[in-house]
Image 1 (cartoon, rainbow, N blue to C red):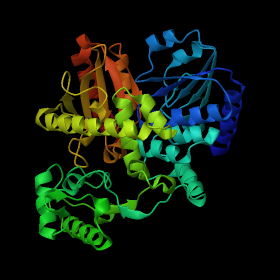
Image 2 (cartoon, one colour):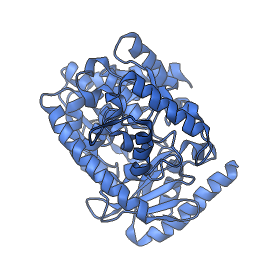
Image 3 (cartoon, rainbow, N blue to C red):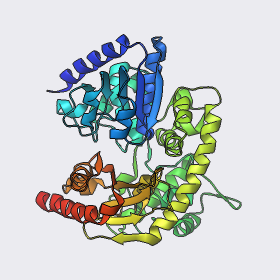
Length: 443
């Protein structure tokens, strides 16, 4: 099995979707899920196929029971991880998560010995079959932490560049160049992390002041507002800082790399850069306004204004969540634990977890929150270094959940789960043993 077989399955899935009369589309609520779902919607609309959309946070037995009478269902960015989909009638699945036991028609790189963790997202998977919304396909991959684009994602990127839909210049890699004031940009930089500066906007502000760049009166500029000379001066100073090994030894070459820009959206700052676009979608999906996010992808009238309001609220809640997290992270041996129940919204708990000790985290982090039913939700985040040492959060959470009657899974680097409250301590102990064994066996 390989890429040729994947493309053959993509064609088969496309043909099956075209046969549908009034399917229910079920997509995940995160950036990649909204991106993948929007690609499916665009395809359905373009072919005059009536449809309905349901965006969900997790696919479980209760939801599958709700839709058991549906005759046609399309899953986007989920569906491959739950064998219960086998009980439905006609099903087409576009997913890239680790899959097992699903017999329905599924386009999933894991079924073809391809890498669904780093080389294909839910959105790019859907694009290979349906060929709609190229910029949105890239946004889903970037939002799912698949940077730099490689493998099958890279094949799409090269095609999109050739068509003039995407540009990939080399620039400062940090996320937030368009949206974040410079001190915040440096403080929350990840891959590469800035030792001695990361996590402290105050230290970053002093660093910038010593350079004499970035401030306009009392207001801090954003990177996008710097002129060419100022950008070169900043990158040069950061390269020297890292090369000198202040606070640790890091490769200064990691500072610059590809950034993904969309010429057709140049007039909309939030959509011009793939990273910025992905944040708006996350803001919508994680605050129960998934339709706004999909409307942004589909360029519906008035959607961008609504998306901006969601983005502002999202940023405020993230700042508050991060402040709480730094004061409340506990070390559980093989992993770090952040208990954000009742404090951090379950829609952003995973994002907050990923921003704790960015780039400098030596252990995976598990964060707890409460969902709308007051059940415990867990979000896990790893790093690429930990993956290289054997970490697989998706498999680890699935195994630990199975031992306590919960449900979990996802990617090696990022995964989620739900567990019964009364068995949380048991779960954490089991999970600690599983993670310790994963890394030990690899080493």
